[in-house]
Length: 454
Image (cartoon, rainbow, N blue to C red):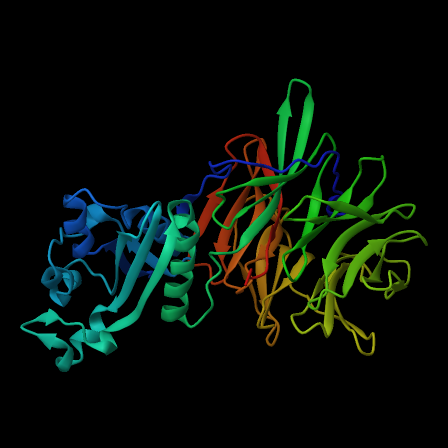
């Protein structure tokens, strides 16, 4: 199976200021909450004096983040009324005219050489409308219960504006949804470029929105199956550089790597346990591919599945008590769950004639998988509510594969095809919105979303 393969030939830590992935909205949000993210009137006055940077440098990143998550419909400056005074920006009626429910007001002030203070406020327009004590002459006042967030960051370098914008997006998302934001995380993926001297593969790590890519591994052999450690410091992957499958670990910060497994046959599908002490891997050293546990402290390995079936693609539950995996032990690929305490195995998926590549949401409620329905030849990404068995198909292209979940369980990144190349796409778990992330050149595949970074 192709998920077993990953190659690495040359480590070179190279970075680019430009994103190698383009984000394109392909399907609008369904009933997304309208939100305005703008410069405050205080900054507008400041800019007229020619001082400092602009909050707009952060605002555009925040808008794209909020659009990406599927829950919001950010309005851009050209869609909004011109606001030049504090009374205007706090006028509930003005925002209601354009359907805005929340407003983010930001200002950037100089604090020395290439350092700035960044302040933003998140306002609830309709909360103010329902609270007469927060209204004065029909205008939204600075009443405490209308200001949902009010934060200031000092000593911010201009080169860190993008990172801070993601942090602001996380703050806004969590305040309005109650779910931790995942915009400050990273993704790993494999880029494939075909050139005159052959095909080139690279293992890339980038911000969640595709910006600030770093190349960890370069190779002329295929690369697949990156898997983040729980502390996001290492990535496990599989290499074919010696004409056989081998599992490596690479340090994200330094690019230093070490060989973990080189048994005869398949060495593949690495998956870290939630505590980072074990790595579930697939080995065929005794015959059929089986799942083994690799103790990261002692380097001991233990086989935990047996029989003649192919067992592959392990995925841990958040609490580490269960291991989900793909197996053809029932005749066709389906997903099974092993109770790690008693090693009891139960079948989990029954809808569709093919289910594989399991991923578990952080709350343990949903299983996300590669899915094929009865009578269909196409593969899609689907979710299954574990308590009810209800399956929801999230994507509808001809070949969707390799799903990976954001650490908050709200978004699914996956591989799909566009013409003769592979691209990444993103869909929200509730199906509200969808984006494409094609590479600027070549194909991009095998995504893996990092854990939270702090």
